[in-house]
Length: 199
Image: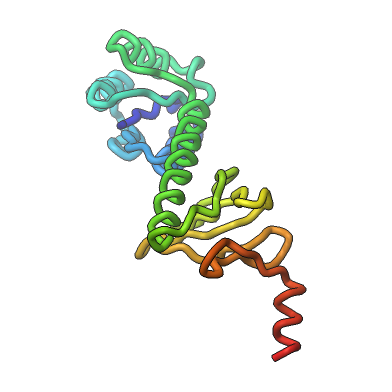
């Protein structure tokens, strides 16, 4: 989906471009393609308002939706862009709504991706230790997932996507869990210390 950014420019410091660039960065981070008028046409001394509007409307009609920046209702151009978008059947919503939708989509995609990734690492015949994924957090190419395990305890695993591999299975209360050959088992930090002392 390609989203056109609409907001106040006339009379704004730096023609409102910093707000447009910040919005474009947020929307792209949320997974959207972006049409940013502040990137598409530089400010030219002597260029008339209606000339900017013509170029902006050409850009808008090639998009799928509109993200409205704060203050858009006080901008004659933004109000017109919103009306054109709605007349063309586009969704024209405030930017916060688009960002919230993007977060939900990313979270859903991350849960699906983590599920497939750790299932991919389990040898054939070994049951899945994860009952449910309660939360995911992405940091670059790694997703950390908080999970509820087979015994009701809370655990965490991290998945790296290059290549897809699962690692750092751990219990939130300390220790880790593993397949002992016949069933899933857990090692607490105390067990690990005792094992080290005995060796």
